[in-house]
Length: 234
Image 1 (cartoon, rainbow, N blue to C red):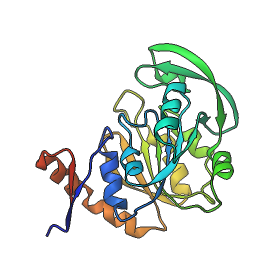
Image 2: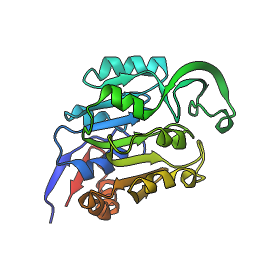
Image 3: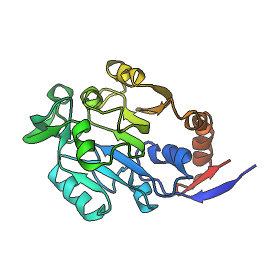
Image 4: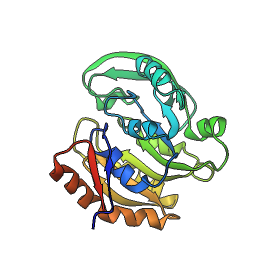
């Protein structure tokens, strides 16, 4: 029996926001972290949440994207940095297919810039309250996933859920074997994969894990309806 039909407009590339909303639709004003936020509108995983009253932290090293975030996400914490395993500076390689700190992942480099790098542990300690509730953290850093996770403070700033791009940039080749162990070691479990993204839930939240049992059905219903702005929940 249909419980409710929500008017939900998706902005993400691979239904990430729909999947996340199916898990967190009962949260009116939640908090997210978007690492590799890029554009605040185009293919954004977090725009729909922001529009619904959520707020969060966006991390984006590119000046034009960062300035757009400042303008369109005034409620959010917006940081123009890269994140990694250690604090410092690094070369950031610009590419049409996905700018990255990892030169070996791209062949069509258009330019490069020097950016500041910090760890997520330092960033969270500076900008968030200790133990602050983080509903989800999205990581899309074009090959830098392991470094981001190595620099994360899983004790004091634990997201309920991670959604992480899990393939070699620009391909469908799985890459998660190089970093998934960090999440497992810190008491997270893999619960779902859709397209290039993998979802991991804190083991302290079994009720969130259960919701992923129905995601396939939700997506099928969404696609079958042929109404891009509507999503059906049972």
